[in-house]
Length: 137
Image 1: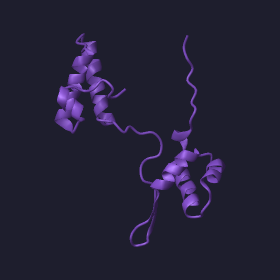
Image 2: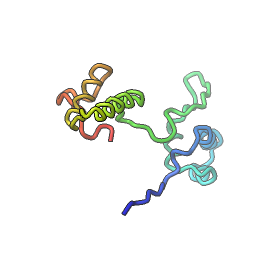
Image 3: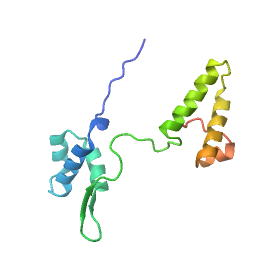
Image 4: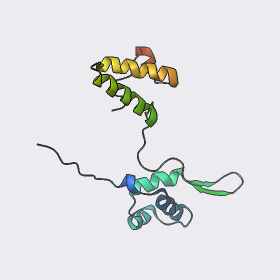
């Protein structure tokens, strides 16, 4: 029986402008985080985290009013860009259509070789000469 997926967070749908306005209200105007979070519909812990990341003033006293980091979800262990992943995916699909499917071990070695030619990679990839099992899942 298929399971239905119910979204339990709205974190991804908060715009950067709304979040910046809420953070400014907390930092600059002195409102309490819980009050601003309730009024704006932003999760309290998200607002707390971005309030800590907020660039208030630099050494010259200039206010920048910027948030450090992106809003929403991001991959902290991402090795390849979306374009590079698309290239690998396209190659694997084409090879499969030509009846030259690769095993998971061979795909991991291919990902390692691709990363070796293009960029840095995690140390465990270098030790084992292949991508790890948990990467990209």
